[in-house]
View 1: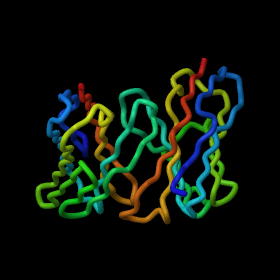
View 2 (view 1 turned 60 degrees about the vertical axis):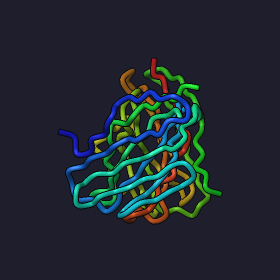
View 3 (view 1 turned 45 degrees about the vertical axis):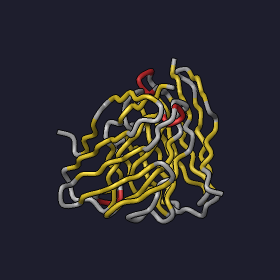
View 4 (view 1 turned 180 degrees about the horizontal axis):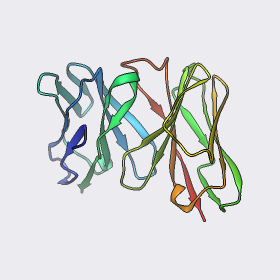
Length: 108
Length: 114
């Protein structure tokens, strides 16, 4: 079993829909990161969370430390949101352990 | 300037070639990382430099040789690679390499070994 599990693996939505991507982890962490990777390859850091909730534009990330679970929400989704979303947790030595990623496709 | 740059963007090399990948950041970050990413897989950590010293080597084969000439620059020297080394190579940096710091990633070098 991976230390970081993401669901779903693939997600297709219509423009405007509300999207949720989930991340569960099984180890002690100091922080959880949500990353976005577009087909070109570059990775962008969206959020770093150690507790509670953060919001940036149409993106919202939450974390429940007791339940070892985090969610990434996208409101009013748009085709430009199509990307791979990766959950990563900080463990010992501040290294990142990555989930397998969620491929999101938003159709117009 | 919150950018990590990587050159070249694409590289094709034969198994007997020697080439280098370059990564640069001017954010004053003191921790720099090399990752390897195969298609449809998450990045795999290869090396970490902290204050220009190699602090983590994830048992990477010696045909990959990292170098950190100064605090802004990170190189990855490649020699006698195998076709299975074809992948996207990502560089990243963090402010000090501690906990709860954002990692800034470069756009990557897409490597094809023939």
